[in-house]
Length: 290
Image (cartoon, rainbow, N blue to C red; front, top):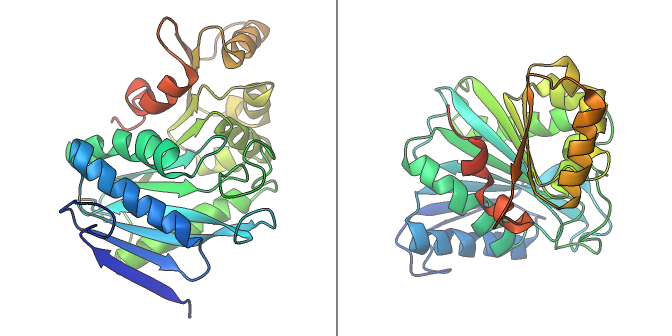
């Protein structure tokens, strides 16, 4: 049996919040990450008004990593209290960028501040947030791009593991229909590339894949030619004009010729930056809309 630690709190340990959050973590996860997540929940409570929730920290399936602080990457599964897992729900899987999995960059600005308002407006969802090899908690915060789930079936097994956690949360009742949606910000695009090559991305068949200023180098062409071009998955690519993703993506679209119906490039110009796109990608892309 797994050693599980449960912390039910109103976040007074982390903030002055009065919201109720339960944080459950498996023995062996990086406790500093648990504390950062708890602090992030408190910040969002105060800044925008949050929602009650349960968070599961699990050692990432296949996440052994000798370059990580505890030699194993983690995974966060966040379930708002309002989410009904027996009804159709959205599973948003988020691939973070360089120096990610930290309190402010990934937890507050990139995920919670963007997603909590959608929950407050009635969106039925869960957030799955895997730690990438370029985590801030490792020795390669800007390296090892795409070196995760490198073999067919590995990512699908990871998603099944996340679903098993949700079944436990749901008292083992049958889960409702899942609408998978994926966001990759910055280096997170290299994960989309890898999953396009292995084919796991298309076997999962998300309704939408969003590149958040993340189509560097040949990442988008590799994913597209790997399996995406054979599907009807909506692929949305957001870039800021003048940046490397803009240059290589516009070149790739010219290379493709007639634009595919399910591949759309959105160019943000004056006033937009790499960071601003990442901090607003949920609203920009409509990834949590119907």
